[in-house]
Length: 356
Image 1 (cartoon, rainbow, N blue to C red):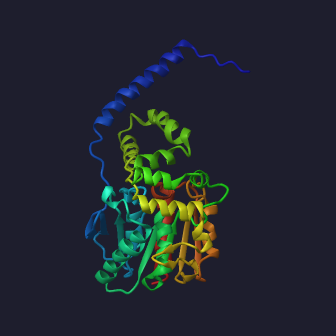
Image 2 (cartoon, rainbow, N blue to C red):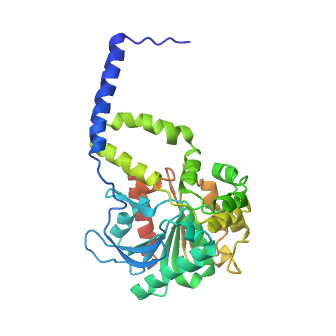
Image 3 (spheres, rainbow, N blue to C red):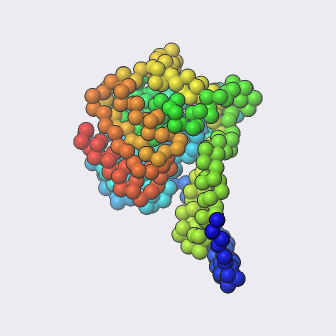
């Protein structure tokens, strides 16, 4: 064993530096102010119940060069402004810079009146009506659809059931095989009595969902990041970035009970998307019905949706125009890291523009 000796002057210096950073950090935290929920100018073009459909405006004022609109369908479990977090960390802005006409669904915050909303309500109801609104506004028969995480699973179901309305499909960090060996979240959820949970709670609290996700990496996501925060407290910009991310992480909507019940049972516990056994409104979701071009984007270090959960998509869809893009990063980094901004929006833009 090697003994490490610290001199009193070293200890004093460390303590002094820590106190200086802490004092500066308190001042910087007080000056953060209100944090935005998205930064790119947008217009609400359709509302229904808790849902709002937004249309984004290009900050440069340029008109889209790709006339087929692109709809982003995000997960229910988190807020979609992760795609537009800050000016230099915005997937939405990156897509606008590629000449795309971008729309996004904000699912809102379900309350007790939404307790009995089903997956069919979200996919064949809300999502379908949003696509009809966009098609009418743009004067087109088909739109491009970008599904993210759970929103990607919903987009796969939708495109299978309504192939006549989708021109091109992009899935990002989207699970398809929910029972891979390296999917820790899948292992946990398979042992939940989801009927007891929903029957007892009604809607599933967002805080409960968030606590589950954080405990997949408890040391890194709960403890270490706050220890590391000390090193940035004296940097106002870094403090603002940190707090912006914290706001998004803990801004977790509740989940409509019946939709949660079906999603957990059909996707995580029975893996029905892989088997072609998901049923919505009496129709079976067969991924072979997806014959439009498909671009599948996954993150190599994703702890929520590992690549092994996303990559089987290529063998399940009916299209011959299937491509994959892998990103060296994690589930969140794919939206906000500098390397992701340089790779993901340009890849999507190039792929879509080649298929106008």
